[in-house]
Image 1 (cartoon, rainbow, N blue to C red):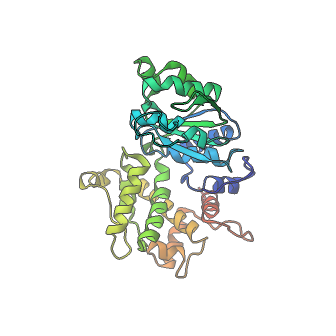
Image 2: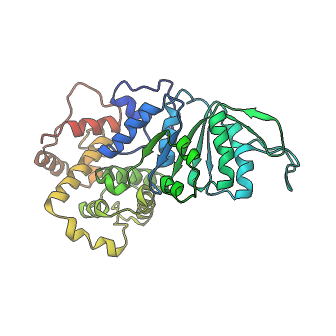
Length: 349
């Protein structure tokens, strides 16, 4: 992700560049990004909560990249993926001979993140017996490596994330209350994908483009019924599940058409949700995305009509029917994100 020196935002173009890996502009997502803008310039601890697959690491990186620490290390540790007997050493480091197998000195993640940001992913999985040491370094910014009596001081900004309900874990004596309060200085709750359905067409086209380039396939058409099915699906695995299914669909695609990647039992729901209103909204979203990607060029080999698998005249007819007009002339469109903004703001309702 690109880094910028100024943490503030002068206009929407700045926001598009700062959050260039975060796709969508639904109200729930905008609320999250507004919180990110407010907390990023500070040194306050941030606790990102949300279901698995909602993009907690992307938000953590965004906080770092628009903070004054943007040019310092961003260090991640997955607390759920490291065994208990190794996690303490991974976080705080150890001296040679500190335990069996410690044949050399090891620098821990806190030291590696000095002057930067430490991202504690799945912080709810940190064992109770290790939590007091973590609390101390959060409060005092100091610790000792395993096997050493020397105190090390660090300047680290903590961003933590979890899919667990830490408040309930505190009530169940599974998580220390003092550590929870220390982590929960500035909470950020990420919405599940089912709560931001209007972002799904943008995410689909984003991943179709990404995997199309990666795999070497050109997807030129997504059926409205396919998009309607993707919008209506509950997405228990959130954006990660959508990403994986789109990758599979691109691999299986033939003749430039994206197949419906959902299991057959979920495809049956299309007949329920694919009413005229839903399909109109989906069709509008698809056209806006294609226009954005083409910089508002309708015809030609790189135009929106080709991307949608339509004749130029057919696309113009659909645009008129949906009330979509070109942005103000005389101003050069700089990027697909800017084009999409102009497209959405130029629709006659």
